[in-house]
Amino acid sequence: MKNIVILISGRGSNMEAIVRACAHEGWPARVAAVVSNRADAGGLAFAAAHGIATAVVDHRGFADREAFDAALAAVVDSYTPDLVVLAGFMRVLTDGFVDRYAGRMLNVHPSLLPSFPGLHTHQRALEAGVALHGATVHFVTSQLDHGPIVLQSAVPVQAGDDAQALAARVLTTEHVIYPRAARWFVEGRLTLEGMRVTVTPPEPQWMFADTQGEAI
Image (tube, rainbow, N blue to C red; front, side, top):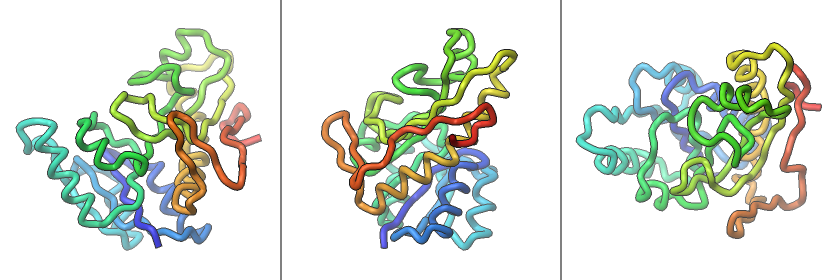
């Protein structure tokens, strides 16, 4: 039984999707803990209500990123994680933290990487006039939002979209692809070679969504 530790900063909707999928699909894993850098993160209540251990490491109590990341790693390691999942964790992690969990830390980013890394992805996609937007699950590396890609979802951009409407459809697909990628990991089905990730036995590493964000 593998242990998953999920890091959040807010409501944790992707965390919720992973918790539910893990339980309903009978993964060979459990969500051992949900850790936040904010005591008021809404997702902590959901985790506690589902019998999952929670912890808070408030970044405001540390002099620098290195000190915070060292304290965070100590808490994460106390749950002996096989997989660390970033689910709306709004902190830029130091290279030391990233290296500590190399090959076993996933993130979901709201764009079709390598396009639009960083913040404000939906508005930037609209301003660029792209026809497809989406989300990417990737392994975390020291280069922000540029790790090896596990799974992507593509969402059509509609006439009249604003950033909020587009974000909502992309989030719907995140709730599909993030649990799927995490399941592949805990089932031992992912192989990472350089920047290339393969799934064994093969499954599509992409998803197309309709105008509502539902898989097609």
